[in-house]
Length: 223
Ligand code: Z5A
Ligand code: MG
Image (tube, rainbow, N blue to C red; front, side, top):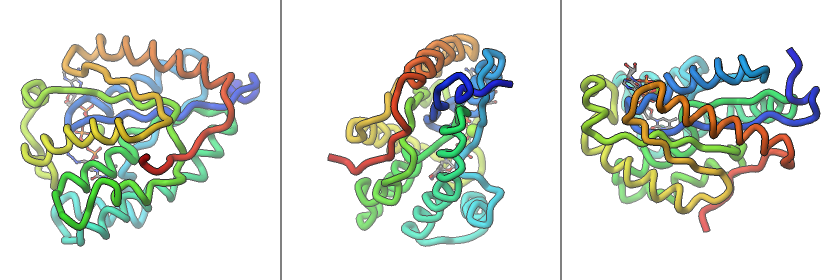
């Protein structure tokens, strides 16, 4: 299949963010299939990637099988992204569009939501500096009531009301502070098809824009 590079352009970096059960993974899979059918080369990755050595430590922590200090686990989540940074950049240069399920935004807000006075949002953002800058961030917005209809909280760490409501507020803050990515808020409380329709339109516009754009950027510090 011809890549976007053989047509003269780079791939796009598209991130999907949101709270628990907002439908991120469902929509990432939909978008991968949709863009592939439209003739693009696409990869879908998700963070945390629990397959690497670092990812296995994160997995044990999320399942409550190990205790890790707040700063240390935060840096492991970030290190997990850095493990993939070079390959993401290479794919984008080679005309492959990369869709990422949770990224640095989740990284900063979930750690800051612990309300550890020694772990501010600004501190939490700092290890992300220099990672590939998304061209587009699709934020799937869902109310706690709609999310609850999709099943109760699972057994993993962070899956409780207090964390989720702090996370919701912190996502707003981080998107206000973070400049560069085109952040699009999508009402994810609707049907799968309604959400997918919006996502496919926005992503298609992004790919058209990126074809004319310069190289991929890097995440920068808060102002
Ligand atoms: N975390 C962190 O602390 N630091 C970091 O740097 C990163 C993450 C990257 C695990 O994340 C935890 O790691 C997470 C943040 C933290 N903690 N929390 N909370 P994860 O990505 O592995 O897991 P998750 O995203 O929280 O959960 P999820 O279950 O994968 O949610 P989702 O992907 O958004 O939803 P889904 O799997 O697509 O859909 C959930 C269900 O709803 C499923 O039954 C669907 O069929 C259904 N669904 C989806 N869309 C709809 C619509 N539109 N209508 C009706 N039903 C729907
Ligand atoms: Mg998911």
